[in-house]
Amino acid sequence: MTFEQTLQQIVHEAVYDAISKSQQSHLPLALTVEQAAEQAGVGLTKMREWTRREGFPAIRDGKRVMIPTRLFIEWLEREARNV
Image (cartoon, rainbow, N blue to C red; front, side, top):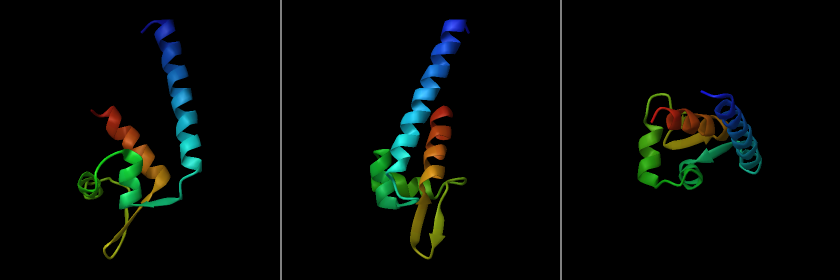
């Protein structure tokens, strides 16, 4: 990787982190399945599938599922890197 590519990657990550933190500031600490689906831009069926994956950050209380916002965003970022 060249110096210019490395610099571009650093800038890209810094901008992405700043945007991500800005977006998180207006969200609640935890999201419902519906809210998380809306934020991720996926349907409820896909979101419910994700909540059943091992390692997905979800808190279950009976049938209710709450998704910690910060952990959800971090999970999405990790999943995107694994594609």
